[in-house]
Image 1 (cartoon, helix red, strand yellow):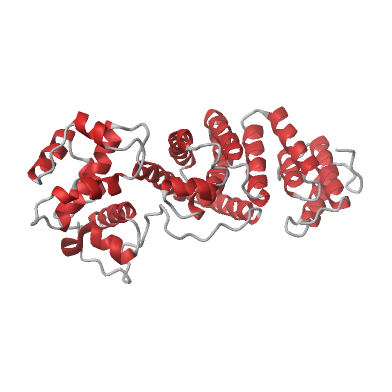
Image 2 (cartoon, rainbow, N blue to C red; image 1 turned 90 degrees about the vertical axis):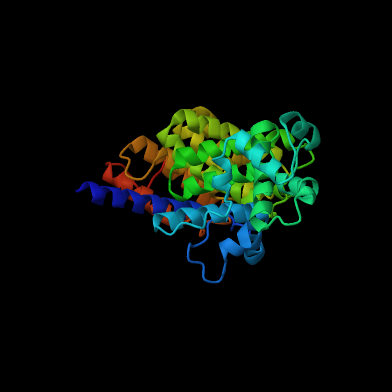
Length: 378
């Protein structure tokens, strides 16, 4: 088998695994205003004229918040650069602002009538909030009357960048959104470890801001001023990516499992159809990363708590006897567990293809020389 063919086979297997995992989850909430920046570079429905409209204009056309439009502009700028059609230098993208040294940021703000130094910035900015909103309320009123849209874009993005450099704890809403976006970008490219690292950083920055009363993802989303779906979907995506990471880097997997536990503890009032897959994902991460006793304890606890839901049965059976294994004892245990689930009976057997799984394990057991018609007690 050629190297390219092998890589294609791995990608196909990964795609299949991801599709199967997503089938086991409740549907994602539909996205409204989110942190996702990616749009097609051509995007004919958004007739953006960057030299004239700037980031403000893109936000209005796409009907997204300013910072999300800035992320979109970065994607467009990179795409155009690859095609040798860079956006006009007049457009202040987020990447361009981030590339400036602090003294250059401050000097340009000074040219635009905004006087700022480190101490004043710390004293004036709130402990947590939106750098974009703060800049619009505090700095933009002092901009000269002749300041065009690009000058206003620069002032607003400079506030985001200086907040990141001068008072990273706690981060602004925009800095948190950026970590979400970066993680999602890596996840889309199947760079699981990088995605997990960015998302762990996101959670570590967000967690200190969450009070015990914020027990649902939508309540926490209000703190970030994002659509109610964003954190709901993010936690599911993070949890699924963590199951891939555990097999690549056990140490990162264990850190992800710690975050999964904290997410579940924080959002204790979230719906059970959301929580149970995350609990099972966490158990899988722990199992693959070497914490097998704890993983089995968690899944058995879920079976006891949800005896008519197939999820924990199937996940534990998959961990004991993954596809292709020839361990007769492991297959027998897994088969017994799924037979037990079918006998309960579980309410979602069809959704989990329980009969198909049982037949498959019987065939595996027979291939190993066992009796596929019988199964020992799980």
